[in-house]
Length: 280
Image 1 (cartoon, rainbow, N blue to C red):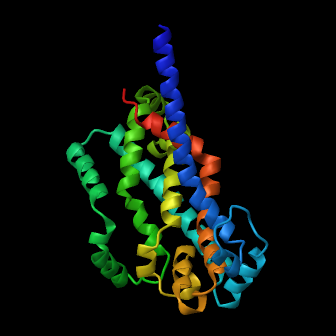
Image 2 (cartoon, rainbow, N blue to C red; image 1 turned 30 degrees about the vertical axis):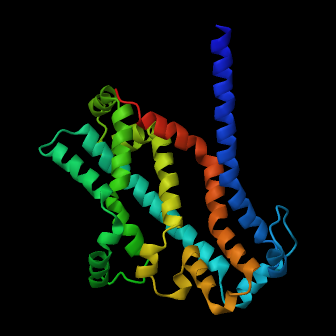
Image 3 (cartoon, helix red, strand yellow; image 1 turned 90 degrees about the vertical axis):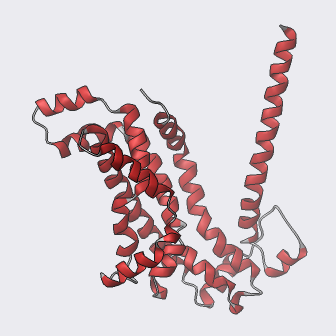
């Protein structure tokens, strides 16, 4: 018995050491990025440092002085991410609710088709998607990045998996007997119960929209509509080639909001995924 306890304790110590190493490997690059955003080009060229410097304002002024409108890019990314998150969560949960709750002909085929759509990368259909948006007159318009999310296959798949694990049909039937409409049941019964799953989906949708560079770069052409990732790619130009501190500051500006969102809402990710993984 004592040998078993010793082996168990040794295994736990080994697991904790591995997790700690992984934590360091994950955090250190991000911390160095943030630290370098506060350092000058000369300090960065002298080598690595784990302590912040005093050149944050100077680097910010360099970005503004060379035409990079960081506040505007931040506002554009925030608007796009928030709008995309709301559209994705609402319509994905609404579609998932319909699939889980109702029985209709071809339901299984429809569900399998959603899985197929999840596995198809956006890059394969971007040419046809661009032509479609162009014919609708939605190029250089945020609507081209927001409205298609009404049919977000990944969101519907996640919502379906989650609702299958917690939907209460007796509660739905009781609401119908009380005279509630189907939309009222969804809004007043299902959504309050599905808050952990909806929050998890919202976090992933927000991060995906915030980091979205490929679609935005193809569909958006006006500089004043550029998002933060699109503005950051302009830092590769000649005017910033020797301004390393400003480049690091631009990169840091794109990841800090994501870190904040994850820090405050990470518990929803854990609870939402755990609930969605349990089947009745």
